[in-house]
Image (cartoon, rainbow, N blue to C red; front, side, top):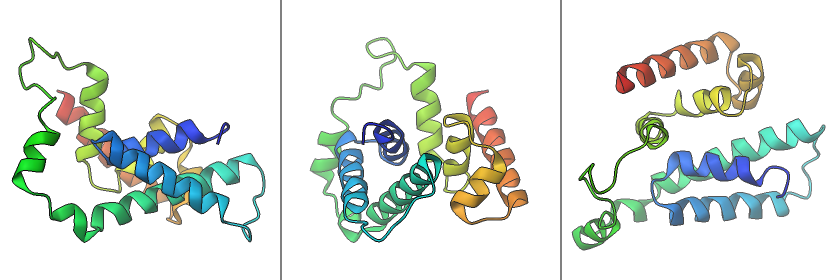
Length: 153
């Protein structure tokens, strides 16, 4: 957890606006890692890639869960109560804009773009992690960068 916990945490935050949901996904990922007795890793990069892939899958599963779609109006109002739309009282930073844009993207290109921009992986490395052809990863990265550029313009 010391070596790759911050990476897994950032992946979880990429999927969820609420930190409580990200904490749940992080915890679920670490539980899966702790109970993966039969998994053997070929070094730290393989372990990190495995954790990123598991975290992504956990987050996607949580988003698909039926319980997430059954939120009452009161809970929705309460969840957004602490976020002020007034830019004077709570100015938005560039970093939070980028995170909001990344969270609004579909996956892919969200995860490959995150792995490239924030974690520094190359397209061939990302292709190995997500089991996709390298040219497809290049397409996802180009599409994601275009979306990010348009949204920030």
